[in-house]
Image (cartoon, rainbow, N blue to C red; front, side, top):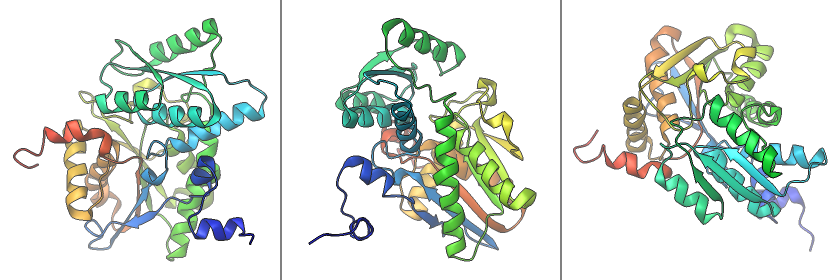
Length: 314
């Protein structure tokens, strides 16, 4: 008996891994009970429901590979500068598509990430770079050119931005409409700036400045996996309006990740913890309303970091 695609998805039956990704959208939007108080209606977009890297990065990596293939580029070997989820997503999708993948990682990359990359058969090249800056990005691009590999370059590839415009932002809008809401404030981390720039484009085009978009970056002395400071000059950030950027320390991000685990029962990553901290910093300034927090990834990759905090409790 033939079962339609719509019914298969409803029954959670997927024919291949790409089907599992794309037909698994939208990712959940969850009301955070511990933060929804005194007129604040707080929702988290749970991007760790994406299947490969358990993060929002599955979306742009899939779209960058798909875009390259549609344009007739032959993808035999991929090189990418990555410190985490993009690398894991790219390693997973490379296996699916029969592509070899080499990940260039900065020195502070969590060991768990390095192990997962190797489990996925990626070649891992550790560098002396402390962060993925323009020098490291340029180095990987030049090596790819010299050695006949392809560098999709998440930092400048418009397929990164476009996938969030077509899917992520629209999902949030439709999910909120389903409960009779529209966003007043959206808070997201700044990495490549793909998803925060798209959220600004989509919601400000539709609702104007009624919707505030808040960015989150590590404080000057901190490093938080998945988000970067504006000094790295993320491509799309400066093309849109972001109402405010909040600095969050690594310590604050870790403690908020633990707080969400203990209050909501979900394990979120450090960039998600940073977004939670930013909400607490700005909520009185922007007053009660509907807030959307983008939770890009889960907490399982950061066990070594959490271990430093749970001895005596946070």
